Image (tube, rainbow, N blue to C red; front, side, top):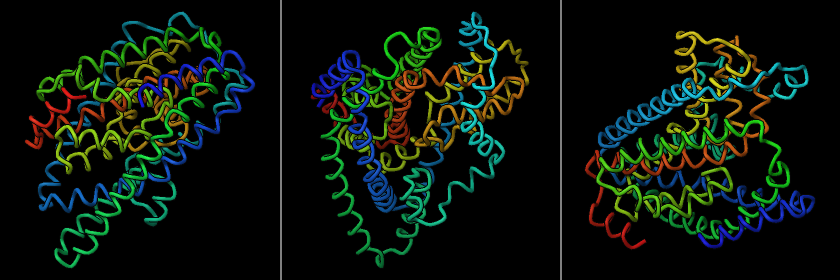
Length: 412
């Protein structure tokens, strides 16, 4: 799979450069691949979370593990956000840009701004309400990971409480979990096709020189993501007794797929399977990974921190210490549960800017041109954070099989 994905990436890049017209018509391959993923991932997540809760035996143990996971998520996303703001203030990537938004710019980002206004005005109460689907079928129809997770947790807790009466249902869900896992393996076999389409169409659309004016910001973001992975996530792995280099090699296929499709949805089942194979308790994997996809968006936090500082510098906006604090708090809130929303980074960034009205929202037009390139590092950073989190929680809970982990990392 790794070799096939690399070949598909090179082929897509070559087609995008040599024949942009033909390359632009290959986007259907990526759309097909991602639609297949969305079709199967919701039911699979539901089955995994429910069986994880029922298999844990004690709801107190589930709650205890969930609290630890939330604490870890909040610490990591806050650290990522503060780190990004600090580096942005130090490097000042927007200091050499003089940007004055036009009416056309404002019109281009109008849809993002409207979505952001709804997201911002709702506040924490809207976020809490958004956790609860109007109906279970609505959550699955919209592929809303956070709502599916909420319903699965409630379903699993109630199934655990009714005891023996729910045994037939437990066996049914176990069987469905095996079924959807097999379906996902068949879908993942089409990953090279999706990667080829993504690389070809994006190369044809943007070319190789169209975004040079924002190269400094893009390069800085990649560097900050790399530093966060090496220092923060690598440090967490070492504290958990795991070799960061071997861990990176273990998930190399998932990282390549994510970097070329700019989404980690496609590799979610594979990540969960590999974590279980390396000795992380299935209950930890079943709860922490799905929750992390909505609540542990480290790379998105880094993007928000850098982008706000960059836009403030580019538009000549001075930010006071109090405005920075408001921005940090708003970014931490608006990024929760944002995974899977189309154009999510721009929408969440617009919601964050709404807390600092002195920065023109229309300045977002600068980042629209390079959002796909930024999305590469953003997707990889989020994936890395959600691969590491279950290992940390597993080690914290004493649910990490060290011998199995060493064998899996050495063999792969």
